[in-house]
Image (cartoon, rainbow, N blue to C red; front, side):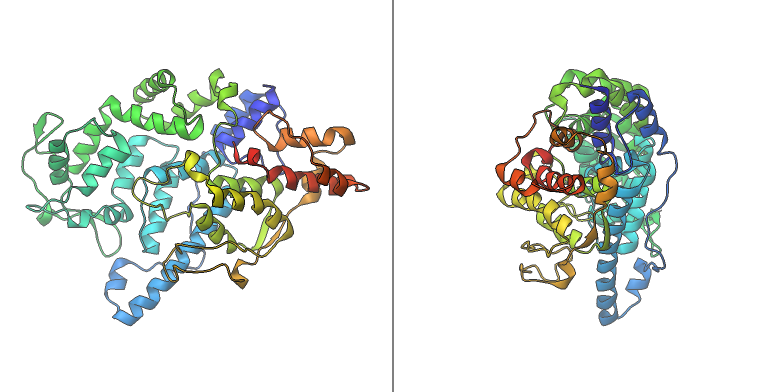
Length: 464
């Protein structure tokens, strides 16, 4: 691979691709440093001017008022979805947003309370490039997670094992690295972990089992924090987390030898996430042919990548909610506690057709005609594909700025240069006769536009 191809690969994996003003020029080492250093600042995600409604305030309302407020909160979650989508597209700290998307799937939670959703995602974004132990502890105390995993029902003399089980099975150790007794005893340690009416974490001591417990063969008067520390002390946790990050950033096909070496260093670095990521991005094997163009873009990666590449701005971004639902990945609405399966699960006959048609619809600011099922808030689960004004795309692509990247390139080289810019695959496509006819007599700007839409509508563009 050329240096430019390596740089482009880095930005596709460490973020959502180079934006419309960026280029793949310079040294790879400088780009790696920028990818890491540009994430030092953190800004919370929130809806300007929107007052939070706490659990206590909801409980104080009568039935009709609560129903109305819950509808407003559902609308706010949708708005927060679009705010995060916009932040992913414009943020300089792309690695923070990319890893936040990963952790959102890893620590999957789905609740209806807007205040809880906002707290949950900002905790993930705050710690996404910090220490995994700190991230795990913070997310485990989030009201959204405690509610989603039923820890409100985890009480002394009547333990609920759901939270303890998922912490071990899905968040840290993975199956086969704990016993059923470990789960039962850990559940006792997490009894009383709850949140108050202000949506703040608290331990309800009257519901907490303070008795002696045996976990991982160790006996003591263990508390919830002790369980998390014991989990982090086990190397199986470093291996499990590293393997998932490898699948997300490198390749679905795991090289166990490389993962094992990475996990050992991750463990020795006391779970410092940037140390692990730097190790990956600086490795020669990260840029080997089998790891380039080997991942299927998730729906969010596809949408944000198009927005960044072409500088798309929206006067009505509401249709992007429908696109997420149709493609199978709606922010804040994972399918279950295991998150999105990813990989080949992103593609079927229906979603592929939608993916291939999306760039043209964006370019033409066209009416969405996708059949929308499983509405986010279940207001109308049988919503059809009938024309709906809220699904009318209102967006603008900055073609003039995008085309500037290719000024001075001879006409006969435009097609290949564009492919190299837009595609992860090194296998070049053949231009169709129909496209050749369309471009006859057109100036460079129009040719760039026609070729770009054609390339982004190919199966090859679905790969990162």
